[in-house]
Image 1: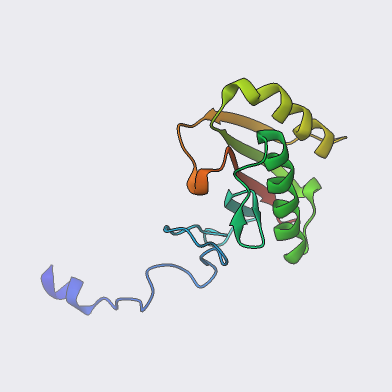
Image 2 (image 1 turned 180 degrees about the vertical axis):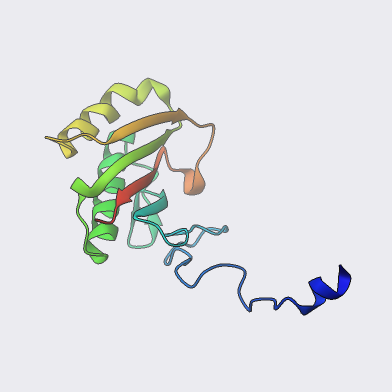
Length: 139
């Protein structure tokens, strides 16, 4: 048994070449943009960033607008649109802001709303009030 295991080759990488880390974040942690071969794209940790700074001084609704603009830009860089988004997970530090955030969300997705889960969070990176994870269809 040991000789059988010794003869197995160990890959240079623990993950597939299509597994990439998110570029541009100043925060500690590995945020992936894809997970192996799939017909889905996973986009994690979209913060209300502008010019490398988290806009934590803005209202939660304004932060969500910025987050969704950043998500749209990320998708556009990869040849996708917001219509390709199938599911969003919205993390919100102040659940009392739910209605105003929901209004922003509904205005941004006028016709087709992706499935959504809203999760109350104690604290988010950079002092943000809102962050989003998304799943988008590649085809």
